[in-house]
Image (cartoon, rainbow, N blue to C red; front, side, top):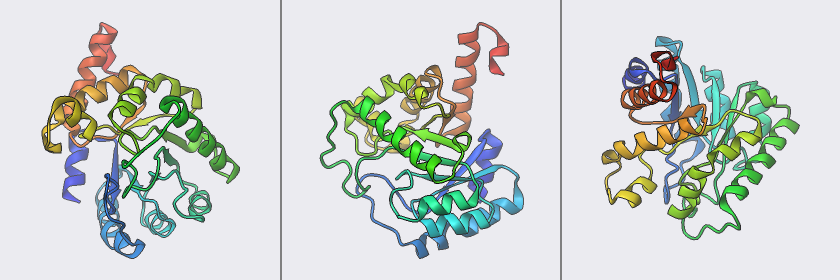
Amino acid sequence: IDHGLRLIEEGADILDVGGESTRPQADYVSAEEEIRRVIPVIEGLRARTDAVISIDTRKAAVMKRAAASGADILNDVSAFTHEPDSLEVAAETGLPIIIMHAQGDPKTMNDNPQYDDVVLDVFDYLEGRLQACIAAGIPKAKIVADPGIGFGKHLHHNVAVMAGLPLYHGLGVPLLLGASRKKMIGQLCNVESAKDRMPGSLACAISGAAAGIQMVRVHDVAETKQAIEVWRACAAGTEKGLN
């Protein structure tokens, strides 16, 4: 809770709360354990701030409890495919959602990902999930799409998706980029520790901003905010670029 409040002070617009790691090879966490981890945090934040809270989960039961506890956004790395009733639950909450592309389950997703054309394949998947969400009763205006850097993608896939980010505006929804501290940065720059990847994370955020991405999910909030604000001013040629 204290960390979340600190991130708000640093300039975060949304706090993304999760109780199950979805990094490659991460172990599965039960819905009961995930609820035990996240609900007190959401309730504690809700009692102390009006900031937007996102729940990062694949599980319908967690979505339902999080929404009842004050979460404002449902963020599902499986694009509401992990559990058969998750899409119905999401529609019932009436909350905005984030759908992300991932190939396979976190435990095995990076073992041998295969694509015909990763940029187009990711687009087609997100478009399909977007239509499924709309068919389930979720308005398009409440949907955000995330191409899923690092989720079932090797280095050459990730850099191709980064280069192809402008294409995803064709989905007609806001876009989220989550590349902060990802393995891609370590592979490109030979940086083993995730905590030492902030410079590369800033480069990813600026690259995303230059491609028109509306949201970036980051660990280093103050540093990213400063980097993007300076980039905006320089790109606009005026201090009004900050706005």
